[in-house]
Image (cartoon, rainbow, N blue to C red; front, side, top):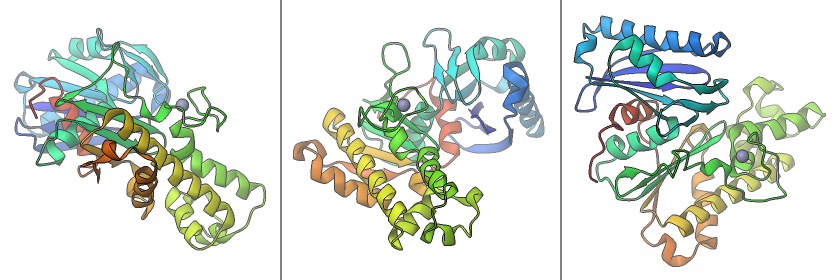
Length: 317
Ligand SMILES: [Zn+2]
């Protein structure tokens, strides 16, 4: 038996997984990040204990507890070096959880885990080379080469959301300007529209959200653009173009067999992926995209749970 945990800034999801990759039980709770590292870590441990108890599985039958955290993870100590959404710096999660539970714990980056989970369990033919791009509030990336997750020299590679697509572009939360994330991340795109509405802009978008800014999300912006909303049209063309440019960069640089697209902006819009693929095709070097397929993710939340539960034991493609 294995335990996989998706530890994000807003929620914690814990899954009990058998050795074939079947999730046989789940528990979740809000992260309550204002309780600090100690409080969140204790909440994770009690979720695990509760789940195991519910399924009458003793800790001695658990071979690994994998934690997928939304942050940068030290390659040696597996400390969480920097997790802005959790508010953690240098958090010794692996050591603390191993002391508390008495079973091996591995801590991984959440997007690496999600990409690995999709690669291993979401598709029947596991290609050698795959790049995962998750466009949600922000943008995360995961790289699989030769069936292994590529983590870089110090374990923090694959930050696709922070490749610079325009050095003079929008400011990104990472401190840089013009990041892929600053152009296509859901938080940034909706913030730009929200700001204009707060300044008094009224277009089709205003009718679509019935004047309620709380419900604004990229799906509405795409829809308003299709209905002729001028501001949303301009914004959405930018999102499409920059996503396409990012795909083109990935294809030209890495020549993967599959680019896997996930996250709420991808799954909550209609034409974004197809339009971005057109942009990519127009810009990429033909040989770089020969045979390339672009797919949507299939496993949703389980991708992260399954990926991190099995990342300690990588297999051949
Ligand atoms: Zn950035």
